[in-house]
Length: 355
Image 1: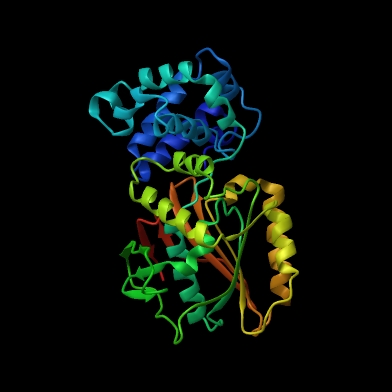
Image 2: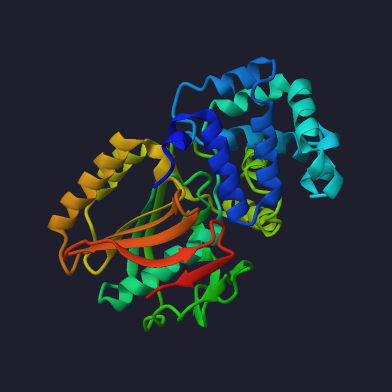
């Protein structure tokens, strides 16, 4: 289990985030977070607000809120001194604590708003895990037609998953002519074969407490600031998503996750269609009350599910004790027991299939 200090103590949360970054191939981000932690006892309103955080610092992703603000200073050109650090240059990595402390001192007013809201870590690479789970569900006998409900959709990038092409362990899914190919390193046996006729999407509906409009350059910059600089491919993916959203915006609304799930489950469900709740790297931010309400709503809907109108739940979430991400699926009718299908990179670089 996650160390209790990481959930209740600011310094513990920063230490957990540093370990998480390093375990997930992000040494630059880990060094930035580590340097912010080293500065926490320093002067100024930004550092005071962080070290006296009133919520749960890990669940609230406090370290990533702070790191996002620093990255935005770099991306916008407001703090040129950070460029060598974000390039991973050895001298800057060694001098990171001084560079970060100086940037915080110079840009405190610009950094303060980054504490006001949770990170937006939208990433289309996670769609690969969603699709692999859908192939598995179809192999269990569920219809290969999905009415998708996503919570924590951020900018709705994964709500455009029907526009991407996937190559998953030798299984091709999606439009061959797509300008975006997602081909994670596949570990283990391949996922189930594509059903005859492929996968079909009856709907892709999503919500976020603070939706991001990819068509707005300022909001796009905010999303880019939460991209770890080590993962350069993600910036190109964001540009493609912004173009796709400009052509046809995703079906994304502002709403609390629990209320949205209940509302979506109450909609009439077409026969021969799987209604599926899906989410990635969002569960930890919801809090116990919303988690319980969503679970209760899904399990109640599961009792009503039939072979003609089944229900599924696809979750790609972090295990904060192992620093790994687990793809877990439940479906009804049946027991609805969680099935661990894979472990995956947080941003879609690889999938380790366990089935």
